[in-house]
Each structure stands twice: as C-alpha cells, then as structure tokens.
Amino acid sequence: MVIRGKLPGTSQAWNITVEKGVISRIDSGGGGKEADFGGDDLYVCGGFFDPQVNGYGGVDFNGRNLTGDDLARASRALAAAGVTRFLPTLTTAPRERMAANLRILARAAEEDFLFGKMCLGVHLEGPYISPEEGFRGAHPREFVRPPDRQEMEEFQDACRGRIRLVSLAPETEGAISFIEWAVSRGWAVGLAHTNAPEETLEDAFRAGARLSCHLGNGAKALLPRHRNPIQKQLSMDGLMASIIADGIHLPDYVVRNFIRAKGTERILLTTDSMAGAGAPPGTYTMGDLEAEISPDRGSARLPGTPYLAGSVLTMDQAVTRVMKFAGIDLSTAVRMAGENAGKLFPQIRAEIKVGSPANLILFDSREEVTVLATWIHGERIWAQKEVAPEAQG
Image (cartoon, rainbow, N blue to C red; front, side):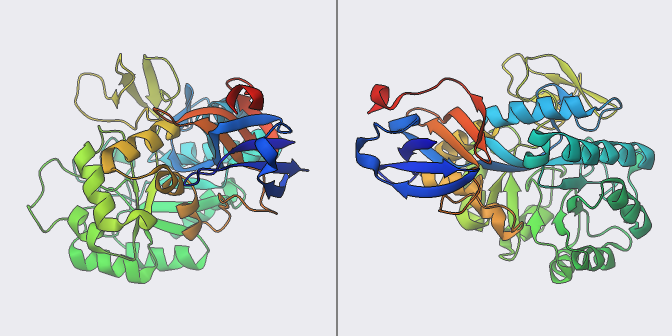
C-alpha cells in the first residue's frame, strides 16, 4: 500500500510505502500516480497521541457500566480525529470502581485489536489530588485521598501492569516519597489539581515528576497575583506541560503565553475529553457526575453551574486551534500532538521513517485540519472518503 502526501513543514509530496504494518519506503514517487491513497495537496503525518481521555464518542471510561464493546467504539471514534495512541484516564472514585474499570480496560486491551493497539497504557488522574475547593475541580471530595502504595499496587494488578501515568498533588501527605517510588516502578508522574507551595513543586521535580497535567486548569479562579502554582510550573524548564487548547479551558492568549513560556518542545496537546466529545449535544456522565454539552458542542459543564467537567475538544480541533491561538506552523503543532510525547513515553514513535509502525493519518489543512483517513499498524481504521491521487495532483 502506498500513501501520498506532504509531510508537515515540507512543500513536496512523498510516497510512503507500507508493508506488513511497517513503513518500508519513503520517496518522491514521480507524481503520485502509483499511490493508493492521498495526493499532492494533502498531508501525511504520524498519528496523534492524547495523554488524557476520560471518555469519547458517548462512552464514559469512568462509568458504572463500561464494557469492552464501548471501548472499541470509542477507539474508532478517536481514530476519526487522527488519534492512533492514547491513555484512557480514570479519575477520582471509590477504590472498587476504579479497580473494576481497570480490569475492564485490561481485558479489552487483550481481546480487542483496535483498543489494544491504541491504548498505550492507563492514566490515573486522582484520587491523590488536593481536596481544596477549586483545586479539586469536578473530582468528588469524598473519594479524594492521600497517595497509597498498596492501593496503587492493587490498581496495577487490576489492569495487568498497564498504568503509565499518575497525576497527583505533591503537597498531599506522603506524596514526595510516593513520586520517587512510582518513578522507580517506571511510571511517569504528572502534577495536577495542586495548590503546592513553590518549594514542594521543586521537591516533586527532584523526586521525578516530569509533567504539568492540563496546566492552567484544576485551580481556583482567584490566585495570588505572582506566586502561585501555575506561574511556578511555567518557570520550571524540567517540566513538560499538557494543555487543553480549546479556547475555553484556556483563552487563546493564555495558550499563546504558555507556549512562549514553556517552548514548543515542552508542550503536549491534550483534550481531557469526556463522553460528549465526538458525540452530539446532550447530557453525558463522567463517573457519578452528569455534564451537559452546550448546543454549539463547545463545552461540558456541570448542570446549572459554570464548572467545566472535562472537554468536548477533539485532537484535530486542538491542532487547528493551537496554530491559530499561538501563531505556530503546522509541523510544530503536529509535533505537540505526537512526537513531543516520546520524551515521556518512549513507546511513542510519531515520526515518519523507514521501520516505524505505520500509525499514520492523511489530512487536509487548507482552512483547518480535516482528517481523511487513519491507519494503525498499517490497517485502515477509518476513512472519511478515499482520495484518488488524480483528483488532487
């Protein structure tokens, strides 16, 4: 199979040959007539990676009745937005519920081809976060608790070793030693929903934390003018930052300022999506909470309140918006949606080179990023339409 398109940041179209799920050849291809998909005016890049997906396509990963079929359906919907790898994310809940859903995730990863290929691992966002109002966000207070190594061992056993990222508040009791322990186990540690003092954030970094999770969110609306956890994390070059570039969680100018402060190489795009992402407006669950999707499909909020409950952002939209908000080019935005994550998760190989898995997307980018087709390990998982080279060349 041959896919033709420009690589972001280049003006020439290339033919990418895929054999047995792997990229076997990359060349200019003489006008693209021999290509099976794509064309000279389209783009090809490695698939997007989303480190924080609470749900998608009507499926709540934190729900009481999650099934393997639900996860397969959500995976296909994510592929339509260009996502080829992601971390299903479980948030603060009773121990029994979290363990039960971790078992469901593990079983689905073993039994379903698509979910198994797309699920890089599991992200636990909570329950080890700040109990303070505002910093806690939409996480239920009654289930917030200090870090517990035995509980984490039970969680890791429940999902058969698939936990890859734990996001927590470093000021909670025992958190710094917990971070050291988690890193020694090979897990990445993120900082989230935190009101930590500056010195505690430094301690967390020295202990091995390397990510500010959805930076700028999970915080009170009113903070000290200069000395606050957001400003401190922005200044820490050793921390990467995931951001929700939807214009709602972070206004456009804040996205621009964050990227200027951290640098494009230290930013990961994430959606923090919930079940209503990639789904029609309506009411969806997020664990035991209900969230309403606005008629314009712009936000998810707790009914009757201004409080956000995850997002309905899709990753193709995130790439489009970060270019607009921050004035960056396509190749830079694509790196933030894929390659940059390889610094935290070596399994991420979003670059296009011979020998790499054929996790690819074909897309148009004339006005906004529009995904036309997605391949995972060389298998075409989703296509809006087949684009003949003759129609585009």
